[in-house]
Amino acid sequence: MNSLFFGDNLHVLRKYVKTESVDLVYLDPPFNSNAEYNLLFSNPTASGHRAQIQAFDDTWTWGEEAEQALAAVEENGGRVWQITEALHSTLGRCNLTAYLLMMTVRLIELHRTLKPTGSLYIHCDPTASHYLKIILDTIFGPFGFKNELIWKRTSAHSASKRWADIHDVILFYTKSKDYKWNSVYTPYEDAYKARFKNIDPNGRVWYDDNLTAPGLRNGFSGKPWKGFDPSEKGNHWKVSRNTIVALIGEEEASRLNTIEKLDFLEKEDLIYWPKNGGFPRFKRVLGPGIPVQDLILDIFPVNSQAEERVGYPTQKPLTLLQRIIEVSSDKGDVILDPFCGCGTAVLAAQKQERQWIGIDITHLAIHVIADRLARWAPHAKFEILGQPTDLAGAQELAEIDKYQFQWWATWLCGGQPFGGEQKGRDRGIDGTLEFVSRRGQHDWGIISVKGGKKLNPSMIRDLVGTVAREKASLGVFVCISEPTKEMEIEAVAAGFVELGGTKYRKIQIRTIEQLLRGEAVASPYLLTTAQQAPNISRPSKNRIKAIAPEELQKQRSMLLPIPGGLKSGKQRTLPLDEPLLTIQQDRKSRPPRAS
Image (cartoon, rainbow, N blue to C red):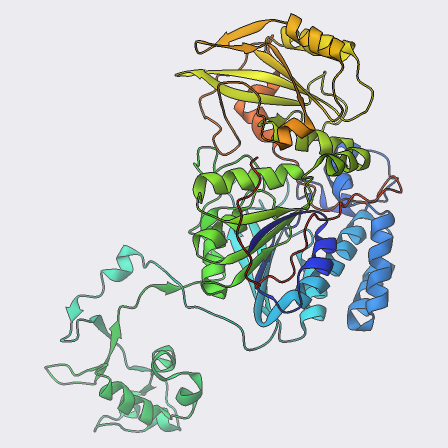
């Protein structure tokens, strides 16, 4: 059963993903590539340039969780602890060490979940890829590393006093030598295909190539064959090893000497005998394409006009994930993305008929993925686990993290969180609604969320004032407790607004219980993340900036899949509503909760 988990991926992996149940892991953990490299080593209390590393501090800081990770790795012991201890001793208790430690405990768990035939791909940037490779080498063993893939993620640009960085690194590891591998090819260039001008009776397109190379040899490659002695011309036989291996396999090919390989090529009709005599030549047959290379230049980043774009700044192109999944898994296999963000790996797995598990610690990401699947894979069946499904769960979330509660409640009524990670600077706006009032015209509304038990009429009056100040069409007040009668009176007193020929209440009150029951906000057609229209006009100076398309994208850029050091004693991970007993267990499918 496909599953989308809200929660800390370490908690989910340990409790809900069984050992050797996953065929392919892809992860793109957050890391602040924009920070200056030397700042990654800064002490958390260092002064100066704080704005440059604020995003890094928000995600990877030395704190309680880093200490717990250090203790967990030490308890695990072995070579992994030896390497980790060396890095910890060298770098000290800094942000980079926190990042490496928290990645280490998760990589250990991911290795556990992989089947013996499974593979892992980790997407990282050059500021930490070398450290991660040391850790992965230790976890996966000496034969685990297979490739360092280079993906060109941007076009050429200038850089100050250094080589311009235009690539990301993807490290490819396998759990054993017996791993899944499917041959995947990319198209030949036209200039190369133009060489192949001959067609044999079997329909193969080919051109004749040299079967000898300069230099004398004393072994079989220098011996005569079919009356032709390459040594007379100072040459030796040059046989295409890849052709032999492709036809009979690595092991069988290694048993053949050069003369036997020539006999085999003739048997397979891969020797061309020139009509005017002369040395035989090799029939180079046009293959299905170029085998996938470790330098990926033919997959371009998601640009601002791409239809698949959802607004995450680190969003990876769907074709990149599809290629990885195609190469290292089969239909029906289980794909796991523990940092699923905007869900590209999940969508790619769904499109390629794989099962999948996605994990993220933000409600925002979970709803972005649900919206994306609704648009691009409408028949997908999956469960969303870990989000509140009743009032008690909502109250618990509000107590643990009021911002996560606000974002979740905003998405529950069809809106988008306002202000991204700028906590506390919302000007009375927790979220926005975008809707189509009539053909070619888009309007918007304001959402105000209250997670406390104490409510009063002034909160409604404040919302009325905010709607008027920002020139919004309507306002929605979302509360976890029942509103008072006086609040209802204030909402009714705000009157109606006509949108698209229909009248709607200017101020609407919705409780969490109402939203969970499906009592939606009364408005014209809402635009969700997946449906966001590209031609929303830029707002005037008097209208809140958040409704501009580029600002809406920023709102969806809250990638905090792993919290840093906790500043309070509260545990941020909610208990999951329903356990996933086994990834491969057949379960009765039910549609996901509407977002």
